[in-house]
Length: 210
Ligand SMILES: [Zn+2]
Image (cartoon, rainbow, N blue to C red; front, side):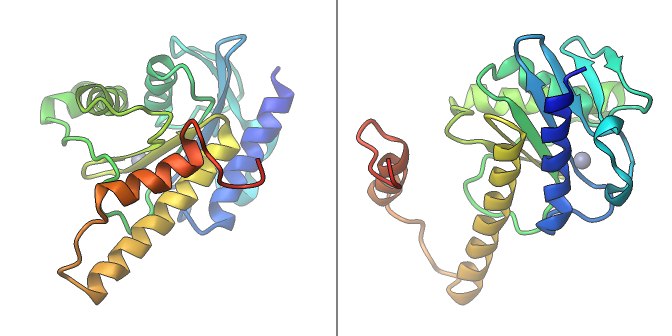
């Protein structure tokens, strides 16, 4: 079932240790087949060097395991909530990379009650709440930091979600070192931020080879 997607999600998972984004098993990638409404995710707690494409677990958008010998990632409920709320996305990454700072959206901290009732499901809910309340488009801002936890990123597929995870870490690292060099540094003016965004993503984008 979904062998091609499993292979892609497997390769996207293997990119995480290769890019030094995770330590041990502290991260996961999933990818969704929108036609069937099924997503493929890393099994829980399996070492990356032992992971095989056939170990990946197939889950539906109601949270039922559809195929797989192993238990899905403990973060499956967060992935599921995001796939339901953000219909444009096709892949999601979760890591615990180290250098976060700045304007990457950050959720509020979950309450003790939310954590005890359903931690991973409420992690998904607090991400959706952050994007809804702050009117952030998840297609344009494909990353979030969960307060007191780590990041989730997404994209049109699993490979692009990994790409965004690598970029998030790199941008955060640049910001950290910039602030070390100049603690009084101000943010770039809005018109420069807009220019950088619009030349790549705006209606008259000209970045790249077209
Ligand atoms: Zn986590």
